[in-house]
Length: 531
Image (cartoon, rainbow, N blue to C red; front, top):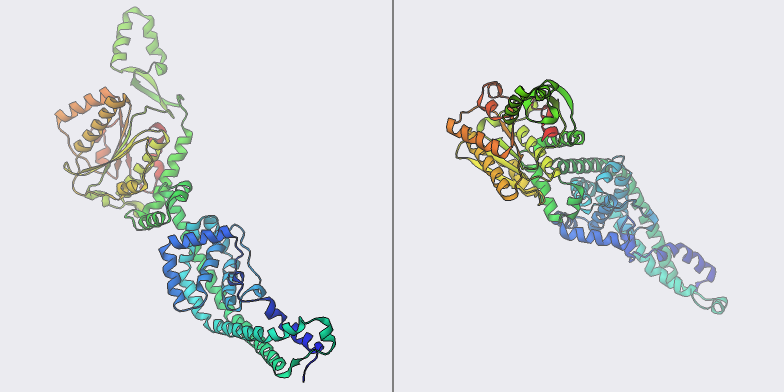
């Protein structure tokens, strides 16, 4: 006895789905449709990221199919327009993954995350790691659904085995079937039982997934929100420290990861926003500069710039008896000139920032900003200024007479981010001495003049304290300043006596200002128009 051809057709139809969707197809293991280039990117990133490998090992020790889940989470963040497979296309064991990835992609915050991660393997990997806590929680809560999915897969495999008999019978020549081809009843019954078991297991799996869905969606939304916030913060941190997208793309994965960690844990990490605002302000001021522009007239000053001599001084040239007076005033830079609030490009000597790092620079001002943070942010903006003008930059950190640290950034070499961080993080402590840093700055400008004949450098002295200098040193300083033609700008942070008329700092500087509100970057804006 056996089943008739019509009965075989019915069994074959019911088993057809199982036969047509073999779990052996690797494409059914991942939710996000990916080409081979995407797969290569994932494999390369996985090999480079210790964090991804450790997370994968941890999850695989407790759950099934987690490598595929991490692959999908990465590709969903990385690909420009990720397309997800339908549920019917997935291996039953990966239906939980499908529900998790669908919840991630459907989250309203997912678009925010992708603004930082699309096309950037590093950022996409960091997004996966940022979601790791939520993924652990989701997998824990989805264990029942995963077990049901495993049972559904086993039932499907049993159906496939049993249905092979039906498939072989259906493939016999038509004339044999016409003569009454049959399949033994036990084999046909096995197919029926397997199909029923598979359908029941699939129904149980769907029910378990439906029960887990609300929790998965909530956890996925939290995960994406956290990942988007982490991605934005890291991107902002890189921008604040002057690390551009092009430099990041060229940076090896481990180096970029180490840099991000250092920036997050730097002593001045909490002032990244201030540093970013300083750099933005300086960039805006540079845009306002007009080479050789007269600028806005704001008064009268003394000097020997014949292009700005006032008419009454020029009138002296018309009187023979006063020409000698004019010549003497010219020689001593005593001619009366129109003073303009200019936006002029000055010389090409080095820009040197002398930054006080004595103990008092730890003091906080309005908004909790320390004097050190303001000074370092200003100095880093001056570094940008020098790079933009193709000028050398030197950062001199000083405190007591025997404490000084010099950081050089030649114009012809890239500004190494690691050295920039060393400059920002170094703090010497102790008292305050003007002579040591200014002497060092003068020596550097003199060496630059001897080596390249460049003059007209700019020194910016940033301090919060007043101190004395010897008369002999002051005479030598003025001689050096006159010979090399450099200018000295003074910034007194929260120190009114140091910025007062008749102070030592006032005598040393051509231009001196006092900073009290440390949250206001505009207080130093004019520096970036005239330097």
